[in-house]
Amino acid sequence: MTTARRKHSAGRAGHRSLGRVLRDRDAALCLCGVVVSGFGTSALWLAAGVWVKDLTGSDGLAALCMLAMWAPTLVGPALGTLADRVRRRPLLVATGPLMACLLLTLFAVDSRDTLWLLFAVLLVYGAAGVVHDAAESALVAAAVDPGLLGDFNGLRMTANEGMKLVAPPAGAGLYAAYGGPSVALLDAATFVLATGVYAALRVREAPPERPTENWRRRTAEGARHLWGRPGLRPLVLAGGVTMLCAGVNGATAYAVVDALGHSPAYAGALYAVQGAGSVVVGLLAGPALRRLGGRRFAVAGIVLLATALAVRAAPYDAVALGTSAAIGAGLPAVLVAALTAVQHETPGPLLGRVTATANSLLFTPNVLGLAAGAALVETVDLRLTMPALGAVLLATATTLARCPMAAAPSDGRTERP
Image (cartoon, rainbow, N blue to C red; front, side, top):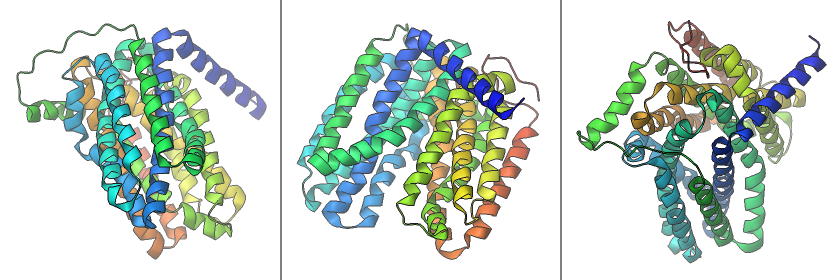
């Protein structure tokens, strides 16, 4: 098949994937909720750092904004237990207005002395986000046809990456024109809109069973389920290693730009190309999961990412742009495969806890990788760091490919090794 025909075939597959989801009313509403809430969150995370930088002049304090939002993932399994204690749709409907009201308190932040309020709000924001993501994943599994889960999760990735391309510049522009409180107001409005979307869902949820165990045991039950499923454990662990390497790579972005001889602003172009790669793969994820199955789709993505990182240090613009696109295309594969497998292989009453545990195992390594990368980039040459990351990822892909059991593909059947 020629390159042009392959591209045309891929485009048609992505279009069919989008059409399948949009024709399902509840799936389309869930995707709309993801887009709306993702826009507000992406706008806030950038504006918060700029806000702190303007008030204090400190890069370290500005970086703490991201840490405050990510820190609650460390206790994700415990927070995910909340999502299994109540019906998920009412939880999401109630969370929106509460978070909107909380964000409005940021109008009081106008000096260094009031920054504690911003960090407190961001910490609560991150904790609410963990609960929200766990409840949303469980609600999606109940509201969306099982055969569409792979398509939905791929399109969710596309929406999230698309928001990262659009929302941060919008948030920065709004901040520059009207200040930090205006961005908080924008995010509050997106919470209200998302609440309306979730309220419109037509999904019946059975009341959760009254717990017979204490909080600690209920939390551990989710971890035991995840660890005991041969279709989930290898995918989630491979995803964690992949995100660790991705974090190290993320910390080297400006070093890559320096090696090319460009100004730091050139990193924006690399991130834009990376986001475009993720958008494309998100559109194709559903058909790819049905054709390849979860394990092989994840392996293909990790191999692509490994290859891109191994050659990323080459000081050529074409290589930098090409590897950025490949990173954007490879990285989402294991995340989409893992989340879809969790939704397929987890009973509804456990899904909040298992999702939160999986998210902690997937995304906490990214934060650790960013910290490790920040140290390595100052002491180790990129020509050593990047091939080493590629080698780690190739070993991860090989290990995942050799697992005796893999994740269930998107049609819910068990995949053969």
